[in-house]
Image (cartoon, rainbow, N blue to C red):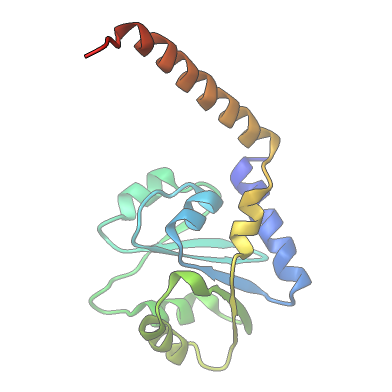
Length: 163
């Protein structure tokens, strides 16, 4: 199982315990954590059955290359608002959590107005809590990064001279 799928599975478990069918993730750090996409113009809709990465033409190719365990959806910004797109993609979902710390009030009012008929619940730190607990994959990567940093410092120290 890929580490992105493990992360998504952990989030899905959190959603089940909080009686939500899906979550809208807006924070780019959280999106990268859940599917690997490193761009900024994206929204992730993750439900018990699917993971959709919504982006526009500027990032579609990049998202298609980077996103793992997520279907990339192209939203045409000129003809479809994010709320309309979410409404179309969320289908029968009735209870949605959303990443409240990563969206401003104006954007949220626009989106929520187009998601009528659904229970929308703000959450704070749900994905961040998952990010705090490191998997064995993440621990290995952190150790490798520390070794690279240690070696870089050791290689640089002889080059430093007074003055």
